Image (cartoon, rainbow, N blue to C red; front, side):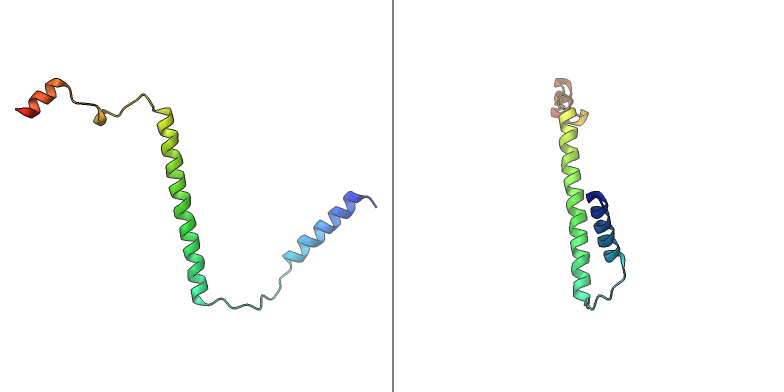
Length: 84
């Protein structure tokens, strides 16, 4: 019997052990469920915030020299119209 066959057999035994249904013998009260939901919501907000921040940095990196039209300084003619 080779070492690879032995390792494969052990791995198969471990997988089968965890796939068998077992009684949990545990109680989850409503506050535990609420806590799990809070953790999931917090994780989703964190992922969204991280994605938004990374996307903004990538966008700024590729658009360095470009300025949006609304951010440009007004021309002298526009400045005169505003002061009148």
